[in-house]
Amino acid sequence: MTGKKARNIGQRNRYYVRNSHPAIVSEEVFDKVQEEMARRARLVLKEDGTVESSKTKYNGKYLLGNLIVCGDCGASYRRRTERGKVVWRCATRIEKGKEECVDSLTLNDEWIQKVLGEAICENGVYDEELIRNNVDRVYVFHKNIIIYNKDGHKLTAAL
Ligand SMILES: [Zn+2]
Image (cartoon, rainbow, N blue to C red; front, top):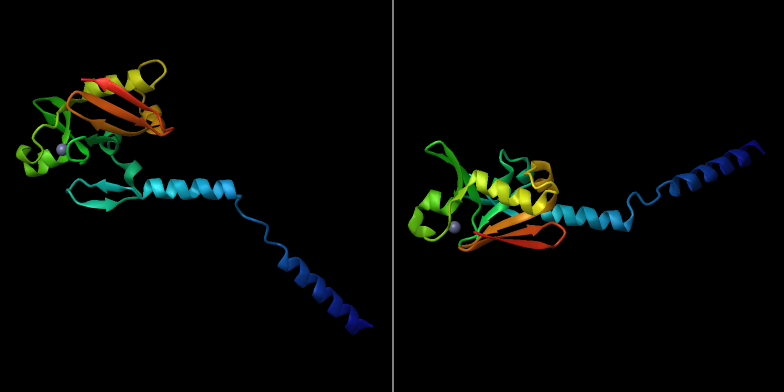
């Protein structure tokens, strides 16, 4: 009898072990994680001009450097201080010279913050956290900038 009882306990233990792994994530959560991973794997132009897929994209020193994209050549915009003023300029133009991206515009930092604040933030004042959470990309063209929001909407601001 003793031997038989011990064997039964063993079988019961195996049964519980086999069934102790419920689904760790729901399908919905899994899909969201996949989307997020894809988003973070996007190609990013780095400070030295090389392109890589970066997971540290959102840890950059300047948020706008991750968001503003040249409508002419597709490079990121980069922050510069010139004559005491902060401006944003196409990285190609900075790295390779203006002849490589002839028509891209230089944006005044105050101006682009004002535009984004008015377009995105409820009270019209630039709030980096709101911009970070809502804006996916800001494309700079010759006569306007187009703000692509993470929810799929886009806004156009005339220059
Ligand atoms: Zn450019």
